[in-house]
Length: 324
Ligand SMILES: NC(=O)C1=CN([C@@H]2O[C@H](COP(=O)(O)OP(=O)(O)OC[C@H]3O[C@@H](n4cnc5c(N)ncnc54)[C@H](O)[C@@H]3O)[C@@H](O)[C@H]2O)C=CC1
Ligand SMILES: O=C(O)C(=O)COP(=O)(O)O
Image 1 (cartoon, rainbow, N blue to C red):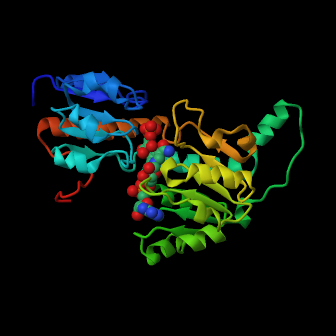
Image 2: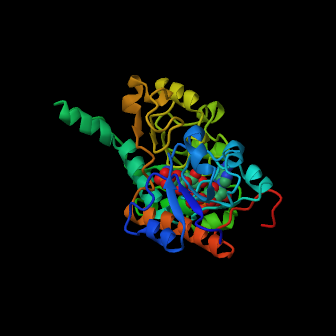
Image 3: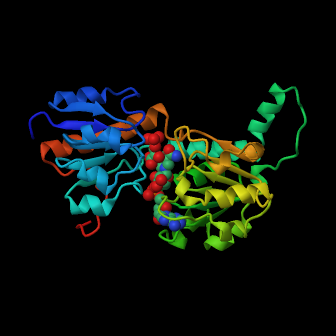
């Protein structure tokens, strides 16, 4: 192990759970520094210059970040999604990448159901109305009578399906990498994306944010009463097209934990005042439970400690051109 390796931490909630992870790093002689979770390159440059390991938040990890970190050996994503990490650039520089699969599955699945029900049953509108002295109600629909489409049937998508099965809706699913027989076993009808778009009253997104799924074409297929739930990534959605579709009444509600402009940028089209009653938004908080924060921290620190010991870290993300 190099003398006193520097571990850069840029996740919002590292060590805010019950574990003292900073102490675990210090116990092996590592020094820990923290940087902004936005991964602002200018702010990170002086910290990256000396870093051996980077416990990274959801911000971008680009070739420029890696070039600013000549001694960096491992990027341990604190969390699951790694679409913002330039894997090709990491591979080219011999930098390992890990993530923490499963650490926040329950937290995010719970949150998806919370957003789904809030959007379906007008919970935020009701709250605002009561506070303003308005007790007017709109009829809403019961989840058990509806069809829910789940895009992405990995850990979180399946956990959402399991939670929803208690409510009794029909479940449709789209995931090109899960065989139809496997979906059958989970009580989910496997369909193509267009069938899911046209046939669902609620759609919940659980695919990685590597490509746009909800684009203008998709929005042209959906039902006017649709509640669209996104606890995955903003990059799955064409946000300007979605804002326009909500405005035109082509779907009922967007309930989302993720926005293209996070951390206080009010320029996002979905934050327009006239869409207040058609959106339910949370601040990327789906994974922020005590259990998930500990799980993500545990996973990231275990990866860094294994690497510093000279062992293969758990949960290596396959890199382009690599063996896995
Ligand atoms: N809001 C938050 O705080 C959190 C968000 N996430 C996001 O949720 C995503 C899913 O997480 P997990 O279920 O743990 O990952 P996972 O890797 O277990 O599942 C992802 C599934 O999506 C499928 N998939 C890939 N491309 C697809 C496509 N184009 N259409 C449909 N399915 C596709 C894969 O085959 C896989 O089954 C993560 O990639 C991450 O971006 C994850 C945790 C916390
Ligand atoms: O696991 C993921 O991919 C997440 O999005 C978690 O994000 P967070 O650690 O809550 O900023």
